[in-house]
Length: 250
Image (cartoon, rainbow, N blue to C red; front, side, top):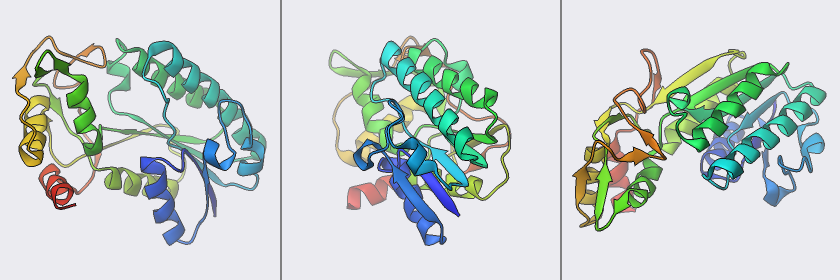
């Protein structure tokens, strides 16, 4: 089966490409570096010709409101039009658990636009909503610096390893289009501040972590439902402690 991965050279796309090739599929890892640009439409018809499945794991290069909306709206429209023209049988798109609860953020409003475009498309689809990745914890901490402190909410978060995200997507690729959402998450939920403290303890980071109920997450005030899945998510197997131990050894 021919599978095109939009964003195929990124963190998730590159891992997914390895899994799908290992399963015997023909995989096109599409990105601007390989001549496929969803913002301009360049290379899309050629890349999608003969494809049965397209997996969109591309992300906006900017988290600012206007650039993110431009990216997800324009790239989404171009990709869906090309997929419909090519007769793609299944579009799988990676989104974020809680997108509909995080709309105080311009970035998540942009992700919501992406999801709405997919829902309205004639191309059969599945949206996979994932919790945040372990690999992003350092960036969350850096973005939460205020003065000399890392100020974070203690709301629950249920992050997962990028390897588990790719594995979950590989499973969805082999399933019929859901025309709905599939939630994926890590095996355990932790308060956000505790997650960062564990990361700092393992990496020797001495910055103080302060619980601040007013601290925002990409402009959003959090509660325990904001970053956690519903009642029946598909869970990854990698625990944060095991991922940390592997990272420290590496």
